[in-house]
Amino acid sequence: MLRYLYVSRSGLGETELLELLPGLLADFLATVTFTLHQHLVLKYQAGILMFPHEQVGTALIEGLVQNYQNYLILHYKLQQFCTKAS
Image (cartoon, rainbow, N blue to C red; front, top):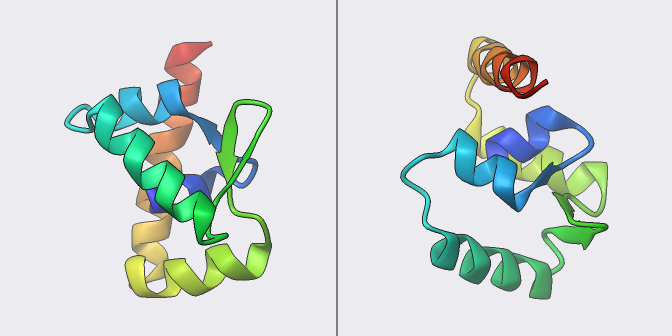
């Protein structure tokens, strides 16, 4: 979930995350979102989840995306999803 938020650059809505990650349950997403928001890791603005500062996303992603190839794969999957949704 955090990787998709980082790759999206401008954030994603909860519905989009649930579609991108079919195994993700809405209850679990709500709990994780609330917890990360309380710890200032995520920001919820106008229905969009995003990182409050670029540095937060970068610090988290350094441990989650091990190399640039993984970043490109995630970016491509998100691009395909957005193209399909349009």
